[in-house]
Length: 84
Image 1 (cartoon, rainbow, N blue to C red):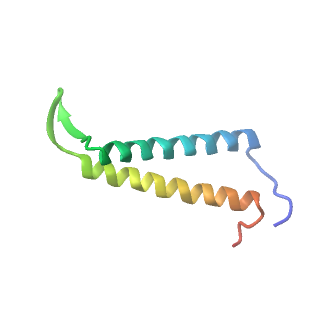
Image 2 (tube, one colour):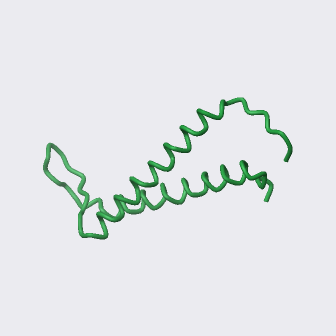
Image 3 (tube, one colour):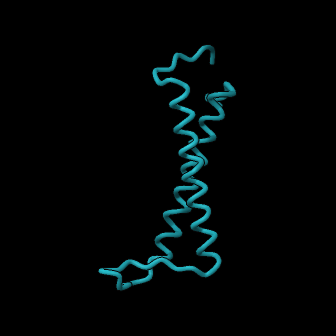
């Protein structure tokens, strides 16, 4: 792959990666809470209107999958295997 000319400083890239890892951790924590029996509800003025747990679970699983894919790409770029 050779030398990589970055238009974005590496410090900023590291901040993005840190943010991605933190988002993945938060999503994993939300899934853990759901697995422990906690529920999420949509509501209006503090009154639950319907259970949103399944939707919330799906969204968090998507976050984890997308972050994992981005971190894999980041690792492959840094290891010179981005073309794999």
